Image (cartoon, rainbow, N blue to C red):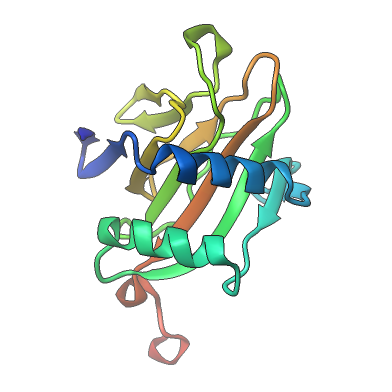
Length: 177
C-alpha cells in the first residue's frame, strides 16, 4: 500500500485489488452499461464524461460495498457509479465533498495501461500536483475534500468505478441551524 499525505490529506492505493476473474467481470459490466451525461464538477461548468449509476439491488453494488467498506470504517455508502471519459477529454478539478472525513474510492477498470496512455488521477495538495497512475485492478481511496480530476487516455475510453462514503456525523442537521 502506498500513501501520500499533506495537511491531513491521505491518498492510498491497493494494487491487485480483485482476482483476475473478478476484474474481468467488472470490465465487461462497465463495457455493457448504459451511460448518460457526466457529472458537473462545479455548478458553473459544463458536465464532463459519461456516468452509469449502479443501483443498490445489483450484485456489483453489493460486491463493491463489501470490498470497500474496510477503507471507510464508520462511514455510510452514499453512491456508486461508473465514470467514462472519451479520449482527450479534459475534466475539471473538483471535490467530491466538503467534509474531510468522507472517503471516495476509485477502482481502475481498464484492462491495460502504458505510461504514454495518460489517464492518471491528479490531486492538488498544498500547492503541488500529485498523480496516481490508472493501473488496472487498482483501488485508489482518498479524503473526498481533496481537489482532484481524472485525466483521459490518449486514444481510448477510460473507466473508473466510483464508491462514495459519507460521514453521518459530518452532516449539518437542519434542526440545528
